[in-house]
Image (cartoon, rainbow, N blue to C red; front, side, top):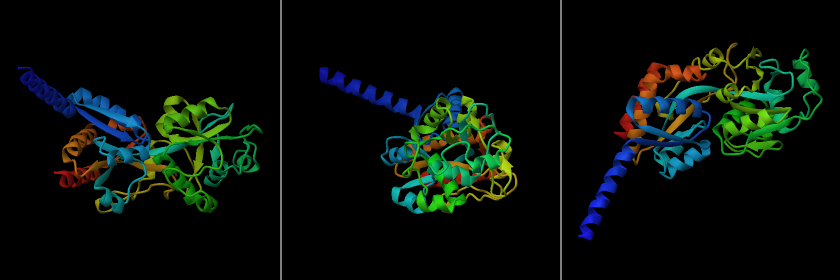
Length: 334
């Protein structure tokens, strides 16, 4: 009798766990898209009853977790190559496009009052420019009162797609940076302190006077942190906003044959913001049930989430691109 009861209980637990799993989608990775993914997840829960639990742990962590099969989807801002996707039995697609802003905490300096070029930013983050009163900064900002105080650099401490995008941009605008520092999710920083996630960098800059850092736009706007105007590839001063992010996407081709791997930094055009990036989802080809469950969330978000993305200053993908993505990914995981 006891043995029969235990069998019944085990079957009940199994059925409940399967039901629960069908009602929960798990993901982990990039902090860059966390504001929009968390908003989409809330609305998806209201519409479908399915919960999406997303861990904002950095792109490197997301790649590790999807590779280890501990989540239904991974997320990265540093897109994987076709070769890596194939060897890892993964498929990849973009979801939205966003911008990275250079944030500062300087008494008396307001949003977009400070202008920085790529060369100056790279010199600051290499530790070559050490004070806000440096002649190179003052030359670009003759009417801004800047203190003769040491600059505290704040960078990411974790494996970060935001860092990959930021260092890709710096490598494109500074040969010195490219040769000495390079690019990637993790690099050997020569100065500064580390913060975990976009939220960690934002919190540190907000707390530390005369500091500088880099975060996805939403983290600056939601925390009331000042960000700089940047000089773009055309030599124009450009502020971070929806229009300048959109301008940076002109002419971009999303190609499934290349795993949708595309970089948007340092785009041409007078109105293009220079540090723009796509963010990407990774699904496993060897667990099609989990991948299909995750894809349902993003299919719903593609159809219903554009307005929420825009409010957070993310750029939705064109309808034709979203249709191509869904067709391609479904063909891979069916």
